[in-house]
Length: 515
Ligand code: ZN
Image (cartoon, protein in one colour):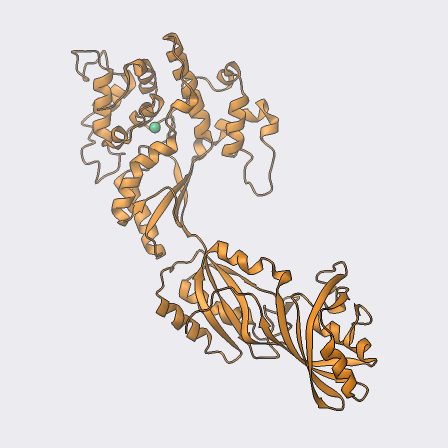
């Protein structure tokens, strides 16, 4: 059953007799059900011929079958029989002038096998997949041409044919190919999935089909830096919406030429959506930067927190690349103690994505084989959850401990003064040491509490609870007056910081795990 409504008969006739494949005939005749499209090519061809033959006459009747299609079918012993084994090319049907072979060659068993091998050899883990197709833009021009022609046929009957009524090539293609790929891969094709199988088609032979549109609608085709050609599908759609029917016919007369070759597959790729992993890290080294320290292409430090964590993640998730982020950062010589600093890693295009809790635990242990860092609460999280880490970061508090030196002898009153200061507001201009990176307007920060512990005449420990984003080193030495007040100013001496540790980053994300 073709399910072509009687009113579309003239449309089917004119298309079929001018080099359009039976599946595209169904599309232009607005057949909105997948079943007829899925018929084997040979059967569909036969059905269509039967439909187009006048009542009581067979499809073989010389006078009634469309002449060039007739020739195509009767030519010697043309054989479409073994369709599922051999491609639709058996008997070499002409290439359809509307789909350029997509609905003929690129949905047969051989093509589906190619997709299967590509996906299989890429070695991804997935539960379902979305199949995405990129089609050459000239298909739009050819389709527009066929639609205008079909519209003319319908007008003769006093009917209208909206462009939106005809079935999109992409949709028909998916109707045919989805079940076939699903069968091969053993999982469902769905409309939304984290795993994507993408195919890009092109057709050089007809690439110039769109070019006339540039003269009609210059505004539609503006060069963009990231596009190879100005003839993007979007631009062509826009131009086709604007062009008047008579102008179109002048440039692109009916029927569209029959191509010699079918579309080529220029790219076939698999991609998995990013997976996010979060946790907290401690850093025990005073010579380890948070991120790779490279100046003018030269590495200044052997490793980094980022590398020690992500090396293991990359190899286990088998990923292409990653993005590391954290709740604030510490200087190379600052340790991060306590429960550690929250971090998250986006793993781009991971191949392995399914892990048990134990496997994640094992991964954490692997990372922890380094003596410079230690990770806890390692877990797989959602993209949305990662944004919690950055939310309200400014309002959060951080606790530090520092070893300070003062020029003058430390007196008991000096330390008491610091102990008694609560909610001290300070103003910090961007520190000289980071000025090259991010010059900002002076900002106010709050030192919530300070506690001191006398070490000797020139040294004491300072424990601070501050608003996130406070520059602690500058608060101690003053940064040439760029931070006021500062410890030196408060104690009326020159002060410097010898050691700094982050004791806690009070962001309660990611959630702590029991172990
Ligand atoms: Zn076609």
